[in-house]
Structures are given as C-alpha cells and as structure tokens.
Length: 510
Image (tube, rainbow, N blue to C red; front, top):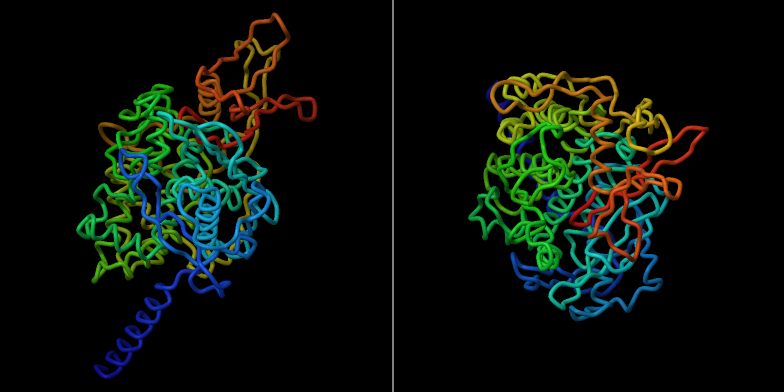
C-alpha cells in the first residue's frame, strides 16, 4: 500500500507541476503573435495622488479581432504603425488601450469558452467619444473620453484600469445579460464591482505587475498597493474640481473596510470616504471582500511567488464566473453571488483550501453573516467540467412587475420594470449591523427604491409636456457634449417600460 500511495503522490505532484507550468503562460502569451512590439502602460498612467508616474513596458502587438471576444477599435478608424511610440502621443494611447483590451478579453475568454458579446460578434470601441471625465458601456460598445483637470488633459482610454473595468461590464453582460435592466440598486452595484474585479484580475496577468506588487506589499497582497488602487490618473483629474468625489490617491481602492448596508438605509450620495446607495460607492463592499479573499487565497499557497499569484488569480476568476452564473437575481444579489462562490470553492477547490479565506472576506465585509457563510459551503455545486460546459438556462430577461409612479407627475399611473425576482436558490442575505442577517426587501420595494434613486441622482431621462411639472432632476455636473442619463422610459406594446441605456462610469454616475 505504501508503494501505491508513493506512486500516486508522484503522479499528483507531476500533474501539479504541469499545471503550474501551463499557468505561467497566459492566453495572450501563448498566442502566435505578429512580429514587433508596442509600448503600453503597465497599469495606470498615474501614481497614487499624482497624475503621472506610470510604468511603460513593451508588449507584443495585440490582435484585437482574434477570438476569444473579438474587438474592433472604431475610433480612430485606422491603427497607427505597430511599433513602440512614446507616451503622450495618440499612437501610444491607441496601443496601450488595445493591449489592455486584448489582455482582458483573453483572461475572461479562457473562463467563458464559446461566449459571445451581447452587442454582437465583435465589440466596437471608441477611444475618444467626447469631452468628459468618464467612460461607459452601452449595448453598442465601449466609449472613452478626454477631460481636463488643472489645465492637463487626461484620456480615460489611456488607463488599463479604466479600459479593463469597462470591458468587464461588456463581459458580464455577455454571460449574465438579465442584470442589465434589473431594477435593483444592489445588482447595479455588483456590475460596478465586477468592472473593478475585471481590472484587478486582468492586471495580474502581467508578470511585471505580479512581481512588483509582491515586492511592494512584502508578499501581503491585502495591503494597499498600486494593484488595489484603481484609476489614479482619472481620479486626480476629478479631484481638481470635486475633491470629495474620489479617494485621496485613486478612484476606488479594493483595500477598504466598508461593511454591507441595506441600500435603503444609505444616503443617495455621499463623499468617497462614506458609503452611499450610488452603485460605484456601494460596489466597494463586494470588491473589498473579493480582494481580501484573493489575498487570503495567495496566503494558502506554499511559495507565494508570482507564479502562485497567477494561478490564484485564474482560480479566483473561475470561482467568480461560476458563482455569478449560478446566482439568483434577487434584491440581495451580493449575498447570492458570495454564497455560490463559497460553494464552488468548497466543492471544486477543496485541495487548495480557498473556502476559508473567501468566507473570511465575505464575513468581514458583511456580505454574508457568519452562520449563512458556513451553510453556503455545504451547498451542492456542479463539478468544474459541468460548470464550464453549462449553458445558462435562465431567460435573458427578468420577471416584470407594474410599479405605481402616479405621484411623480410623469402623466402615467404606472410603469413596467424588470424586477430582481428570480426564485432564490439559496436563502441568504447580507449581514445586519448587530446580529444575524439584514432583512431582505421584496422585489417591489427594491424596484421602487431603485426608481426613486435614479430620480434623485438625475439619471432618468424624463419627457413631460411643456409647462407641466414632472419629476426631472437636473445635474449641474453633467457633461454638455453627450447624454449622461443611464435610464429612460420607453413605450413598448402600449406600456411605458424602464430601460437601461448605458452603464455610465463618470464620477457622479450610474
């Protein structure tokens, strides 16, 4: 028996070694590439509270039209020469955006084989859609902007953080499209969290980022670092006019101490130092739990080197994708995703012992109460092969309900909304501030809260007859070069239906 165990152990060790060797080469690195190289930013052009200080590195020429997830830069219409251009030029901005787009698409494409864009077979990208400190995804493509701060022009599409965040919205819409129109503050916040998680995981596909962040943090990934600090340059530009809208050294930091709160108990807007129901603000709860879990997963590995960090990032991506696909779309969506992720970690990654650090992150940020987090690990999840091969059975649309809006002066008694009302697979919700779980709101209450939140933040396009009072709220900070509302009421089949127009990532948005 001892001999058999020894042989089995040797085979297991050899298999693990092969997996580690394969893990070191990312999809981009394995692709047959055209000759030559381009210059690109390693992560963000900014450095902490400063607008500049990013690291330039040379990367192989990205081929955007390749599978998985083909992409086309529609503006500018033609690509500049594929060679190392200096920072500050339009040519450099083109190639640094292209490199980030290809790297992010490769990462998610490996986890979502056979998935296509919700917008069609290819994702169009506009690298300069107008003047604004902004970027957004709509079901036409990705749009980036240029804006000024203290006399300096910054381009949102020049930041790999911003590019991979927006790409994350398009990826999530491709495999969980019912989230797009969901009338739920928490679902909207999760979309923003996924964008930030996309930026973080895509950055970790670069060896230099992995090596650099391990040196910067002394191997303790959970410390604030250039990895956890997102979109430093864009944040700097926003800070010049609205200092309280962003954090002191970045747009959002994945290392934070925010604890879950029912969105109905939060203010509609708040300074960056506080939590609000605004989706970007609320998203930091889930992102903080995710990043703490990621750091804990790395701590379980033997070597804790850059190869281990690459493997952990890819494993986390697999756990996240499976958790989202299986999660029920309900008002307490954070807890559904978290609980499902714990089940995936416990059933498919038991040898790696990922469940404990993930559970700790979700409990410490209140995404799950302790008892519910423990119960979630016992939920039966499909085997990994089943999960990757599965095609989601859910409808692309959520159940609808009629929402009374007579009190808002819209000239109509009710509207139709897509409610976060799927049957719950798991009986979980976020943590209460004291003991146990917070109350789970019904889908009708969640939808009404979502609608009024849109009105308060001036994000609903309201059309009323001239001279008649209505519920429209103006935003003094809205860009004058393009529309910035995120939702509108459309007449469909004789009914007014609340529809999302775009997922807008300006500093006062969504």
